[in-house]
Length: 297
Image (cartoon, rainbow, N blue to C red; front, side, top):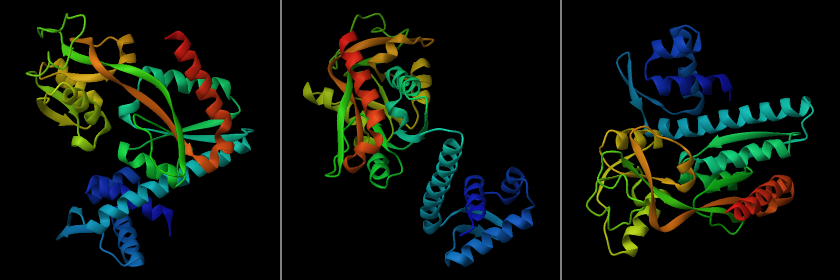
């Protein structure tokens, strides 16, 4: 299959407009139309929903094909980078997987430590949704995954890297903004802002678990996909959200970070058991970093 056609399809699917897609790709609109038609003929499926000359959406097959096309293109780019790294004298590549929920100052320090300790390796970082992480490990798309929950599979090993308390992110004009700490009881009548995904979201489930432990039901006002949006909504006074404890080092305008009593969160490092030897150097750095965190804590 022509990988250029995959790229053309991804751009068309993102734009849902042939003119904008052609402009973005730097080719003519008739050329991209012909490439998409060839792709659909090649795989024997309609990928786009058309209304006369307009694209109005993706078929069910198109949505599935888009996910696989993005995965294939990402893998091709990783292969290209790996080959280039080896050609430039690197000894190998470590592919690390994470999602936005897991991003924290602790994790950034860990990645910096890995790069400093293993300068002869290339580190590639790929973002996944939390519920995609296990499949990414099993499909060998990444070597090591970082998540808030262990990845449960017979072929996957892992360990807890560190633990953190929760911080309640409170608008600075809220009555609890200057409290030394808060409990779920304090927040039971407060609008809460959580990441989208309902109870399938690891973050949501951890937060809900703290409320359930006190016999409470959280009052969730809104769920959105990105942490940056949650912080913006909280700063606007629309509710309270939550961050891992290491964010206490940062300063956010119009927000106060107040420790939340209750069960904290753990960051887990997971990998294919059969690939341990291949990633052992990186895992040793992670373990050393873990020991330093425990000693500092």
